[in-house]
Length: 276
Image (spheres, rainbow, N blue to C red):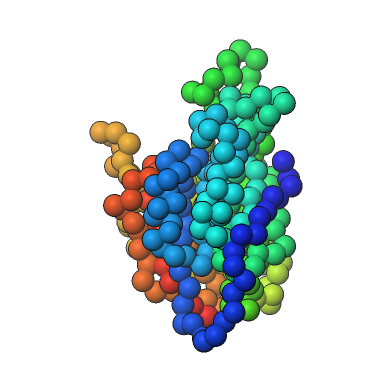
């Protein structure tokens, strides 16, 4: 579960002229259920760095595909994939299925590793009295941050690809976020960093926003009230839970929430990344 898998499909780049910015996309792709539409959108983006959450590996619901590898091959990108959960209703003992996070780039990806958060909910654990069927989503494992260093045009950027807990209250999500900030604080002076993902909370306000600001991170997209997960019913008004944050060495422009894209139950978010 703690082994990061990877693949290299990008054509080696020769930087013939300086570039001012690089496109970054963050997206919870809802397991990759609408894979062709996901790939179609990402191709149009022509992104240099893509961070994806809820990515399936060998699950029945996504035809036993390695979704991260499929996307990387289609877009000719390098990728790393970290396993968040073993999905017990989606595989078997001999052929287990997983869900996790994937980071993809046209640039080299190095030093990939996982932060498996110390504080986890018991909600997803299997129980003897529950059948192993999809509605109960019984799982082994826990929420993670996939960490990787991406060498963008010769400049290393440490990326944290997060999927914070969706159950219980915000205290568990804040605890997980603070683990990432503590990890990043331990590498201060080692270059710029980027935090992105499905945080399952509004990180533009309250204690989450304060903790990120104190750690030196700022909002890259600049649309704090924009919904990134559309309403799911009459009583659901949607949520602002997908975020990207940057350290001071990085700058952003042209932030966007792509709310016309319906290939997932979340909207992609993107921006243009530059170096200060």
